[in-house]
Image (cartoon, rainbow, N blue to C red):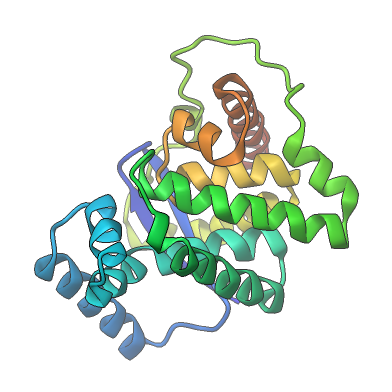
Length: 236
């Protein structure tokens, strides 16, 4: 499995991890960047506007929407399933559900919240068939919610290090270790972390997508980041 490392200025988090099922060759990376930039230049409408346009019969609007979210959705599913085969199956099923729901689509939330709510529900169904105890953790609303309302857990992680050549190998080892520790998080905490970092969703949006309270979402994110921060300290 290939790993790519980029910076995220949103939370000051030093390594935003993008995982793919196959190694990404340089020419493919260039193509992905071109496609992404091309889509952005071609259509600046919001996700909700695109979905409404697709509902009204504009297939090109869906292509743009799909281009914006396919990577984030697949990586979220892959981290949750741990299996490219299962992730691909769920991925296809979720997009089919989006297509099937287009006729009755109305803007009641951000498109990303709606998309990941569908994905979350599909994951719960998947775990009911393959690991019932994991499904139960997704629906638990009994996490410790003690803490400040303005708590920003990702702000407590390490800040970006220098780009000096002598630290690149160390950073690569740190990133690989962090991936392993993310995979080892409890499913609900891992999901919350990925939605925050990968999908760049707020606590309110994560809560809406996963069907829990904001306090539960905040608690799960706090615990996930606390565990990762502890692991990072041990590596130093």
